[in-house]
Image 1 (cartoon, rainbow, N blue to C red):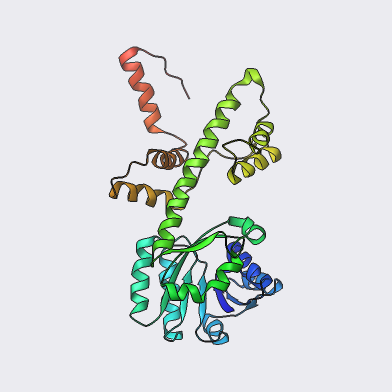
Image 2 (cartoon, rainbow, N blue to C red; image 1 turned 30 degrees about the horizontal axis):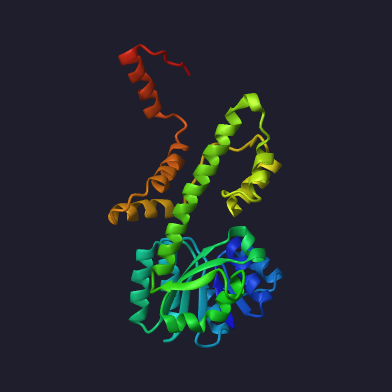
Length: 301
């Protein structure tokens, strides 16, 4: 199958290369010249404009977006609309908010265009290991795109599937990332407890390696944790500041809207927010309160 990849950053270029290896013909576009040049060196036919990209594709055109969630998705779609014809397909493989996806799908359907959302997990390892793809959209359109999904996934019959109508793919990926927040927080807290038990002088990398085989807590995240501890046992040079890309917030908000208790996911999100406060007024106030009611000592800065 022939398709266009819009967004040739690390993830997009890796996905394009995996498709090339699977026998597909991939054209690409990125607003950054350096990204286009790098993609060309990997065998991707890089176009210098969206117009050139669309012209190069056979009808019905298939365009895969790998751009950041939010306004840039809407502006990219707006730029594509004058270039497309009824029956063309846009796939959003980024981490868009599922309600935005539902809106976009409705707007494109009114123009006889198809919009498919593919929640994509696999990170930088996807090129080698394959990607987990959670797909939303019309059943017949997803069936048409099946060769693409089979190539990107770890196997033709594993790691991908249509999970529902438009928006369902991004909704499922949102919850996936919320769960990821909780798993990461649990590992981080557990290893921190062991790191503070100085009397045992535990080798945390060794512990992680033991857990990787046979343990009920083994996982790919644990594999990555073990590798990080092998490379940098004391985590030297890493600031205790944890970013979030939005999916954890959306998951927590959705849980509240649905009256579903999700304390682990919500607290893991709050811990990420807390990590960014270098000068915590709240913690200072807690210390002041303890001093006021109990005369407890205050540690000076």
